[in-house]
Image 1 (tube, rainbow, N blue to C red):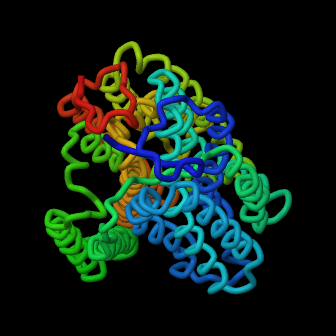
Image 2: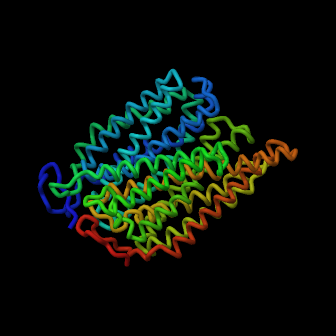
Image 3: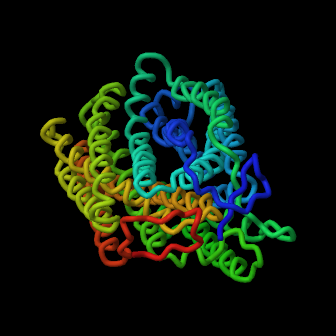
Length: 496
């Protein structure tokens, strides 16, 4: 039996079976926090040229404004998730929010390149602490199957809405005020969470044997391995795949992850119990999440460049151009939340992935002559609708069978998959686009035509990844019962 203890009864061994009356208010607050955190993954993209001019970044140095964040968060998420389980989810969340606020203030006030990069690294560390703890809380607050589906649907939607809204908010603030406000805007949200969260959520942590020791060896090898893998993927965006800067960290990272698996298999109190990955539903959905994020992030990144560099949109126009994607995702989330209890996780997630792939295929037909309504919007609408459709199902599957003991670990694994998938997309698909364009330019093709053709090639590759993800879901995902049981009250949940 998985047990949770609270501030009121720290030694209690009874699971929290009764719904917390504060749960919906807590969900709103936690979703607002997650929106703020994920916003900073994309909000800098539109403002990068202005940050570069203001602080004098070189092209290679500017990449670390993005990479510093991704590297730290991707490398530390698993450790952050398990730390939340062990030391207390509310405590880790508040620590992460405080660090995020300080780091955001540092970025907004940056007067030098090191100051900006240190701030972005701090934001990445803060996300690795706060995000797993936050999702872990939701898994414990909502134990009723219908309510949990709605809560996780809202949570999954926040991931995509933050990604697309980042371009809108960044464009508005950069054009109207200053790029510094894309960081300062985080401060009131963080303050609200720090003040209100302790009143809405009780502390919870996993129950451990009194003589249990923290698995430091597992923590070090898993964190270092993820660092190396994410770093190698990021380096692939600027170096050939077979070059030492790419291959060496990937090999080292794989070796460290293998070492971690050996350590965890022998550990008496493992940081990451290998039995966690025995659940095929969770393993499959986290695997295809890599494909989803690789396609999603590269799509938003490349289309932002296409709109600004080829169609000559301003930052504000670029931001507003993404609004239909957010609307489509919102509609898709509503449909997905309604369909999951009726037809199951497998069908909804599979259809969502394949439909999103069709949307990317439509977008890949862009040319230098394309208009927004004729060339961009149709594919965006289809992609947004089906991507949103898949999100409630995917988030449910990622937490399938999760107990109170492992809720932080489960959310850490999911967030790690999303981060590594983002790095993979930037490394593979964006690089594919740029290199394809470079080859055409060398053959005498006009730069704008070659660049657009490169984007089209990469978008088609993204469409293939999305469809492949859908096929894998239909082929490998277990048929999850639509009536999910209480993850707190049951240690193991078998697929229906």
